[in-house]
Amino acid sequence: MSLIKRFGLFWWDFIVGDDWRVAVGIALALGLTAVLATTWASAWIVMPLAVAAVLWMSLRRVAG
Amino acid sequence: MGVTRGWRSALAGTLAASLALAVIVAALGPALTVIPIEVLRLVVGALLLIFGLQWLRKAILRASGWRALRDEDSVYEREAAAGRAAEHEERAGIDWYGFTVSFKGVLLEGLEVAFIVLTFGSTQGSIPLAVVGAVAAVVLVVIAGIVVRGPLSRVPENTLAFAVGVMLTTFGTFWGAEGAGVDWPGDDASLPFVLGFVVLISLGYVTALRRRRLAPA
Image (cartoon, rainbow over all chains, first blue to last red; front, top):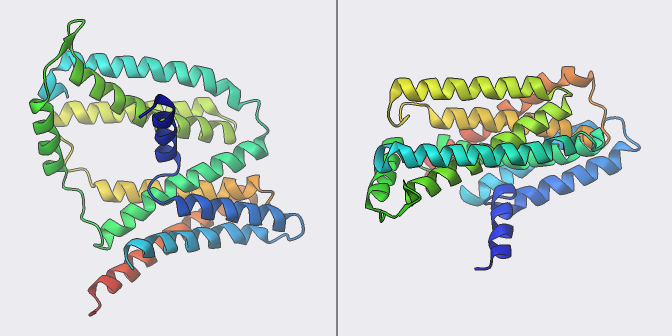
């Protein structure tokens, strides 16, 4: 395995971990929050709800 | 490594990794202070959430019985056997296996700790205070290691993982949303409510998954 590939895999494993869907879900939720925050004062509610949903979906993948 | 391969190589690996960590932190630490605070909070929040949810996910699965709790005694025995069985190769007067395993372990775990300390410190505007907290934790762990002088099998590992996951997820949610442009009601005063929310859903998921596991098929 090349040094660059090993370097990339190390950072992937360090940051993303064993369920990439969690990282994608969090990125989407933060994007949605950023869009809503420009016009909606209560956009703070999005992240806690998104965290609950992402965690549950990740758990259900194992404990179907 | 100290017990199975000798303390000299283990301590040399630990020292070398600590020096490498110091260089990395000295190079990257000041760079964090020039990044705009909103961008820093967004990136740090996202990373803390990703780390935190992974910790929480594993802790919830173990607490609800969907994954076996770590048996620290058997893990220690397995690792010690592997350490004893590894080939002995001496370089520069030290056992190379003991050195590299110690180096990698300290560097990887240390990198995660350094990341958390630097980001917590810089987003709250007090890196020295975060460093004091980290140093206090290191001193406590070293004292515990000296007192116990063996594998820390009596540490409630899953409870600690659950607590760490809850804290990282809470701060990640708070800073991530702030970085995305949100104003929390009451500013910092909303943090305990976010913490309470994360604890409640986590405990709720443990209960739900435990019931699901015990339910007849």
